[in-house]
Each structure stands twice: as structure tokens, then as C-alpha cells.
Length: 89
Image (cartoon, rainbow, N blue to C red; front, side):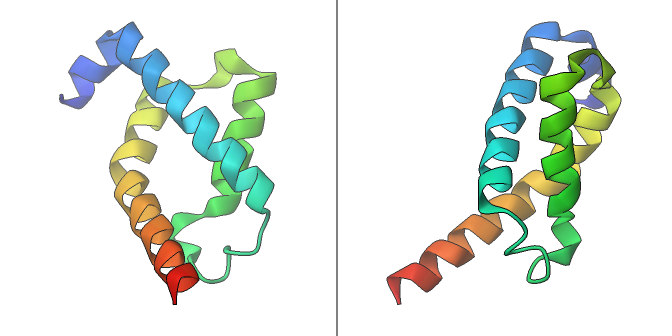
């Protein structure tokens, strides 16, 4: 899906928002303990996204959601796998 298709697809936007809501909530519960280890993720901004989504849902802009998804979702997944590997050792 390209950005134009994403912005026009309310069902997909809603699904992505919901997934990021869960991710942001997990980041909030983890706190800032990973912020210095993964500065490129800007986890503080992710926690802020969750707060904005909960309190001012109408302020979420689909184009910014698209950019966040394209730029950070793979890095977030890599971070999660790296931290899980640390737990196994």
C-alpha cells in the first residue's frame, strides 16, 4: 500500500492507529528505561503519541501516522527481538 492509498483507507488507518495505541501503551508501561539504548526510535515521542491518541483522537493525522509507521515499525520490532534475546541469555 502506498501513502495515498493509506490516507484514503479509513479502515486501515483505524487498524494502524489501534496497533500503535497498543505499542504506545507498552512503551508507556516500560517507561524511559530503553530511551538511551535506542535513541533513533524516539520512544518518548511514541509515548506522547499514545497520550495524544487517548486524549485528543482527532489530532492524529494520517500522513504522520504513515511516516511513523514507515520509519519506525521495523526498528521497534528489531528492538523487541534484541531485548528478548538478552532475556534468554
